[in-house]
Amino acid sequence: MQKGQSKMSNIQTAMNGVRAAGYVDVSEAPATGMITLRGDLSDAGVQKAVKSVMGAGVPATLAVKDADAGQILWMSPDELMIVCAYDQADQMIADLIAALGDTHSMVVNVSDARAVFDLEGAATPEIIAKLAPIDVKSMQTGTVRRTRFAQIPAAFWMTSNDSARIICFRSVAEYMFNQLRNSAQAGFEVGDW
Image: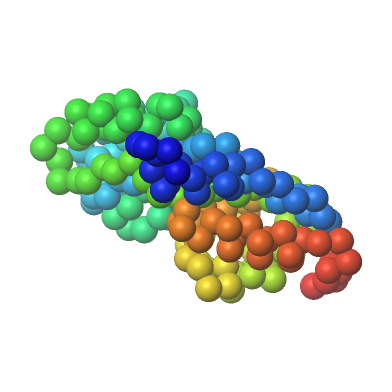
């Protein structure tokens, strides 16, 4: 390791851009900005701040809302995940903090603490169903779930009927990639499930 190089940058480099082609394609997304906003989501100050900075309001329970500056994911009654361009996260945090003013809240950049994976292919729901205890067939595009994939906590949302995006802790990114890749190998299809 070179002087001044952090362990985190080694992990990011090691996983950066990994891909696996199978009956569903698995790939690590490029560096993605992710901001956790904690607060009372029904509070008018929180709602106004989110709308002014993101260009869209607080999403409904379990929903993903597209916004001018990215996406807003409902994570719990007091938590949003804001997904944006990696290089815009710090400015967005500053804007959110300014817009929130004295409103009781917490805004944190978690971009470097998370890894993001994309699944692409008609059998994407099948891959998720193999690994997560979720009724994927009943999920609609634009909804988000916090769950686990095998032994790791994660969140995911269907970006279309044939694609999904998964967020997990960066410390388990390699494990997540390997289990997704293994589940999506040609010849491992479940078929009618």
